[in-house]
Structure formats: structure tokens, C-alpha cells
Amino acid sequence: METNMTYESAYKELTAIANEIETESISVDILAEKVKRASDLILFCQEKLRSTEEEVGRIIKNITSTDD
Image (cartoon, rainbow, N blue to C red; front, side, top):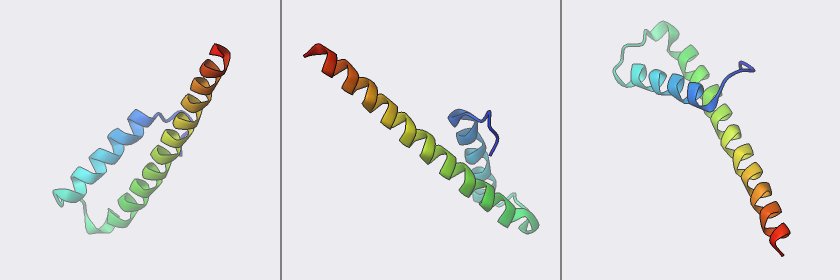
């Protein structure tokens, strides 16, 4: 996965792949390659969401602990 990829760019590419599959505009010859790429993008997005959720949780915890 590219080191400079953002959630938005990964989601955009994933949406494009899903569109190609749904409209059957993908050649059978590259279908497996596209599905593998989609799988990698899904994992990237899941990890990005998980890490963002953890970071936001830490920030909120810090805010609430300093309010006490």
C-alpha cells in the first residue's frame, strides 16, 4: 500500500473498482487482480478508521481527565 495514501483516496479507488465490477466492465483476465486490490483497500480503510477511533478516544480521555 502506498505510504502517502489517504482514506479518501483509498475509498475513491475502492468505489471505482466496485463500479467496474457491478457494471461488468472489468475483463475476466484482470478481475482477480481488481478483487485483490479491493481487499487491500478495505483492510487499509478499516485500519485507518480503527486508528482514528483510538486517537479520538485518547484525546477525549485527556480532555475529560483534565476537567476533573
